[in-house]
Length: 273
Image (cartoon, rainbow, N blue to C red; front, side, top):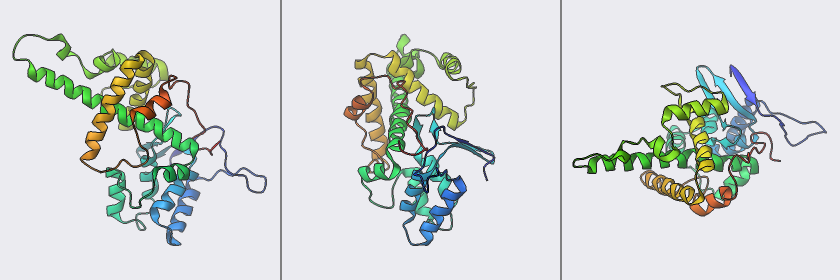
């Protein structure tokens, strides 16, 4: 049982008999398990459970599950982990690990079907997570590698650029200043050791911060760099990205004409408006 759960505002579900139903996490888990027991493939039952899920955040024991970041970015694999933890007797362990650690799906489901199963609002927030967290992390890694290469290439002498941190080069501030700006913006204090859930939230905030301060050419260049790094990393694990086709054109279509702070606050996890 959860120590606490946080639900999103404006919760909606398809009305039944004139009433608005809000399935509790326990009901979603029950339906998912029953569907698997009735013969449905566990991955399809899992996706249906994700589509019905309405809880943005939970505390389970000592662990906090934050499925929705800043009301905009949906980490569906984290929710998948949460739901699969409730069905260890019904899901092959190897298939579970392949999904959660390598994003390898047990069924060949096309992206458009995946989007339809998840629902428009959740899928939109899923794309925010992919671009705003995964691609952003890949961009950071790419820039860190650039800095290391520059340092190794110096036979002698000083190059001040090589003494930059990744944060300074990408976002224009050292990490400590970015932590302070993040606190001013969100009220969330980050310390030296940041839990991974909080780090993902910080990364998404950095993504939005970068889009606000960079010109379009720099945004396109950095996005291209992040996508290339992510593709390289994925080629070492899986032959196909699951869940969405990410490219520069898709990024430009989604974010090119606006700052993401035009608040893409779709009613995620709360019915598909």
